[in-house]
Image 1: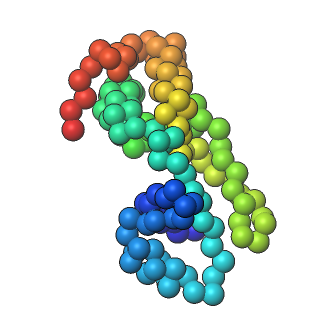
Image 2: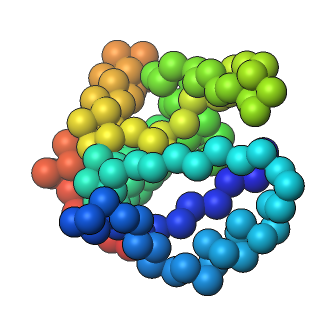
Length: 139
């Protein structure tokens, strides 16, 4: 299943105003005569870029270095250890179990996830990962 995000905002009249209406029209045109899902997520609920930078630049990086695996594989390991699998419903109403994802975590959920990863690293690996306030994450 291919997915594409389209940014926008809902105005005071309750109308969706897309950031790139042309891209939206092209996406719709590419899916003529197909059933699709349209999902709306409030932007302020999504986790922050600074959380992602800390998670990948510090948490994942330190665990990957310690266990001798790539950052990508380490990220997959941490998700599998600390996030629930997701269940999705297909358009024909069948269900699939999907691997865990950090993509849709809110700020609060992402913070809790990072803390679970840090505790696990300390308890299971004996690895102390500094708090976000103790490090400067560079791009």
